[in-house]
Length: 112
Image (cartoon, rainbow, N blue to C red; front, top):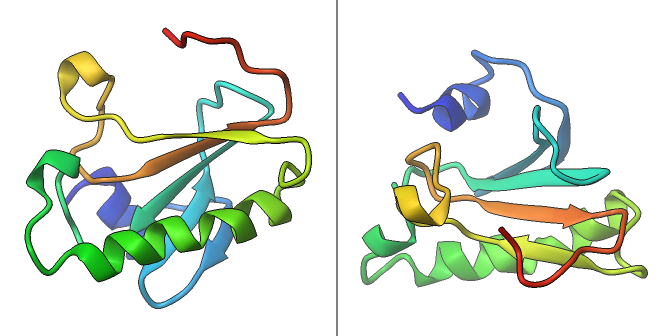
């Protein structure tokens, strides 16, 4: 099981911000901004490059909950960044597709 599967299964505690039948959103334990939330599908998809036909509904839902997570964390009005990492060079550290919602301060560009 991945770290995120264990969090979804409640084997590892997390500060949950949002949950429904398809996704779980929780605060990152090593935040890179004042608001840093991970939005994770409950069904394992290892990474964005592993998406298959039939995953569109889950991916659409994952993105559709972002505005609610932003509202609940207080960054909906001020703005936020949404990041999906893929592979080692892309910064992926857990092989379970997830979005990083970052906000609470001005974010520079380019990242990295």
